Length: 122
Image (cartoon, rainbow, N blue to C red; front, side, top):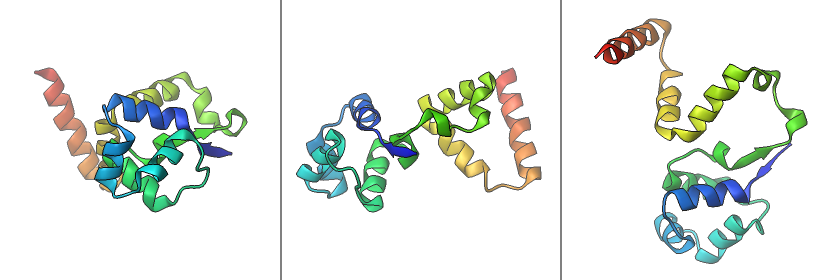
């Protein structure tokens, strides 16, 4: 089962040097509601509010969720996959790139791979 993680929310807020007041101003969500969400008192915030907060924090709603360990996919048992997952968690820009790449066809993906390889040669 997944649940909203106040620890992850607050970590993201701290890492972007934001306050509840600044998030409230940028999202249009009342400050008291923002404080309840980040304090873990609002266990079921609206998707709309979570998306607004995610936009301000430059991340996805998935970054706010905590999963029970017995529900994890067997993919997370693979150490390489875990390493990539951690990298994606730490690099929101790479996550955005992957989100865009998911919509490309195979030929375009191959083209991007060759471009990335050329850039790495420099």
